[in-house]
Length: 204
Image (cartoon, rainbow, N blue to C red; front, side, top):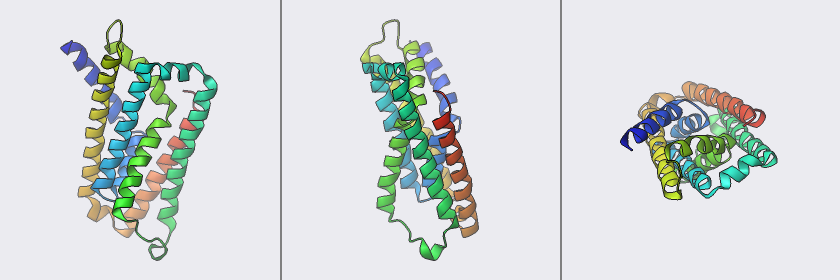
């Protein structure tokens, strides 16, 4: 059992630390402050836990069996990421005098929602959890076993992304300089747009 859990943790860690939409979004929102970045990570983890429960209850299997539903989800997820990327690009080109700062509390709330929606709208999460969790949940996977592994994966993700957010926050004095901030917005904007296009056009 312990060996199986260690193997699951190793596989999960490789997947979690591989840069993707969740990492890019967390780094982008961490520029507004550590709280915003951490709440983005919590939103992502909440989405992953939801996918684990969907897998345990059979919802993900039904979704994966219907190509039309996956296509809709893929397009919605891609549009979400493209929209976030376009907003980052627009922010990099706006004059500071015409771009009023967003209140931290409102920004934090939006960050959680963005992390949650971004993860839930990614059809690859359904395929990923369907292929990964049952392999480590025993011969006859039960709902508690699948949910437990999903929770473990989500907690690992939150810890990693929250760590990334804290690193960005520590460097925020430098990153918030006008020129650096513009380039950060442009880079994360391009990355998010690119990932959104890939999610929308790539077969799940």
